[in-house]
Amino acid sequence: MNRRNFLYAAAASTGLAIARPAFGKKTGSATLSHKERVDRALRGRDLDRPPFTFYHHYKRPTAQLEAQDHLDFHRTYNTDIVKIMNDFDYPQSKTGKWYD
Image (cartoon, rainbow, N blue to C red; front, side):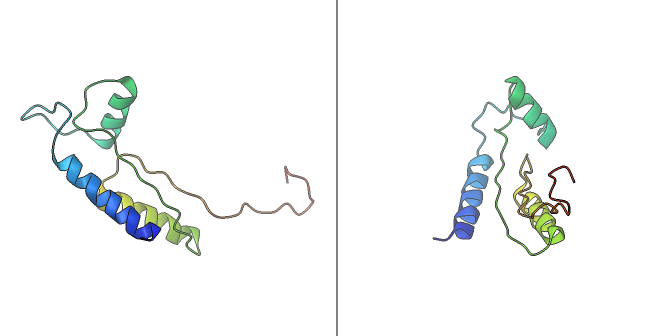
């Protein structure tokens, strides 16, 4: 199994686990927004489900394509936290000094 297939399988199985409320969600209670869910988790308060995130290095040729892949993944799998993996080099100094 390659890494991409593993990621898709892991995200799909997590989606199935999330579909079954197991964290004290009361019948008729409103679903939390992504921000509310993360904020409540950080404060140790009651949740409808644990916050979910997953990230991947896409290794795309441009930053624009890389950002689009991250956003597409977030929208497809409805993650609560988006972590962008920057695989691009920072500009090199022309003088050799790190602060240039």
